[in-house]
Length: 90
Image 1: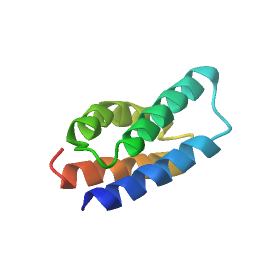
Image 2: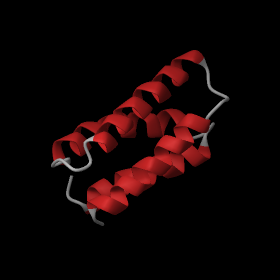
Image 3: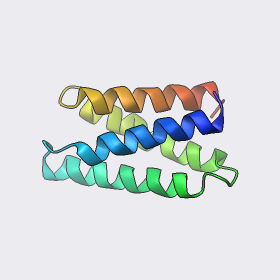
């Protein structure tokens, strides 16, 4: 998977995070932080993003556990991004 495809997955995840409306305050803050991190990473998409992708991996894994039951679409999008990062060797 190339960087362009990964950025497309990140955009999809960002959209899913933005559309989530049935979350409690703690999870909403997690969503906001993750969405902010993704947006910043996408803004730097032309730079060498390997370190940015690496930094995003752990928060994505934590979010995956948090949203697995209540938000299956977010979980699916997170899983796709994690798999893409793994395919890229991050």
